[in-house]
Length: 67
Image 1 (cartoon, rainbow, N blue to C red):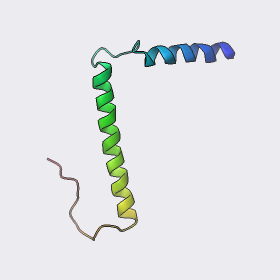
Image 2: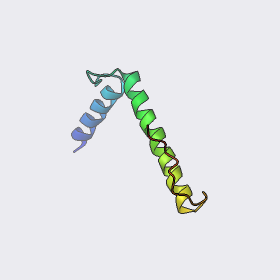
Image 3: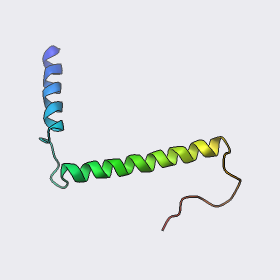
C-alpha cells in the first residue's frame, strides 16, 4: 500500500514540475485559463450569495451582460 502512495507522490511531483504539460497549452496559458475560470466561479458565487440574502433591489434584469 505504501508503494502506491510513493508512486502517486512521485507522479504528482513530476506533474507539478512541468513534466505533464499538455500539448496544446503551456503551463502559463493553462494557469491563466484556470485562474480565469476560478474568477468567474467566484463572481457567480458572490452573485448567488447576494441574491439569497436579498442584497440587491428586485429586478427582472440580469447583472450578467451576455454579448
